[in-house]
Length: 310
Image 1 (tube, one colour):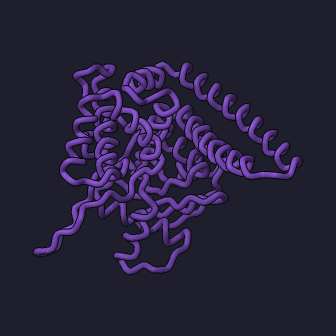
Image 2: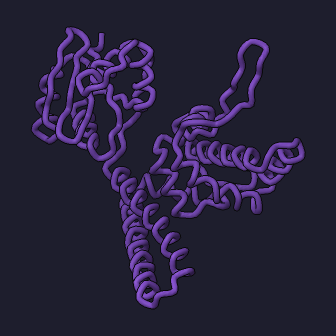
Image 3: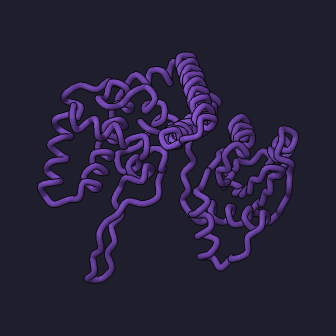
């Protein structure tokens, strides 16, 4: 019988709630606090349920993995809705920890492997890269309409700086990938697919490190590319995609457009959807889903793309 423990993570503290016997403790969110929490959990097999909080849960998750404790990350929105369904409308760190523990006991939550330190670093670099790309677009638009010579000179200088920073980030990402043989192998498989370059491949791997270990429905659902059926009684609504990992969908959009030019099977699939009256956005979403399923299958089988893969 597992001990279910919910942990609410904030920048300064870890609020933990043990379901049986009911007990609450608070620990500092640092190395000493994580070690004390592990000692408090004790020897019996335990399952720890928590919400991902970016950099704040990184040390905590690594400590759980090192101690051999099963860690289950849950979507914060799902945890909030579970709390509301049980009648708990108040929200504090202590209440949230108890809700997470009860959620772990009631629902069949599935633990997933923790990200490696390399993937954490790549994720941080990827987020910084996306921010720089947005800055470059904004600076380029401003530079095109700027009239004042000083402003134009500053915008050009900023664009030059952004370009240098992007090159530095790309070089660091490449170095980290080369230093990890398994990650390098997975990247090479993805880049063999027409339309997926090195930058896109790394974005896919950092956004969904589980890719290759999932079935097709799980992969599409995690990406938010699986249409959700809407039906009640005799009424049937239009199926829509929702939720999932928005960063992964953004990474797949341009490769899907390129695949329409270089992959005959996907191009025919797109045209069939258009001929059936589907809007372009719906057809492109279907191609993104097909591309993700293809990537999942190739990574699962450990093989590169060929004409028959699609």
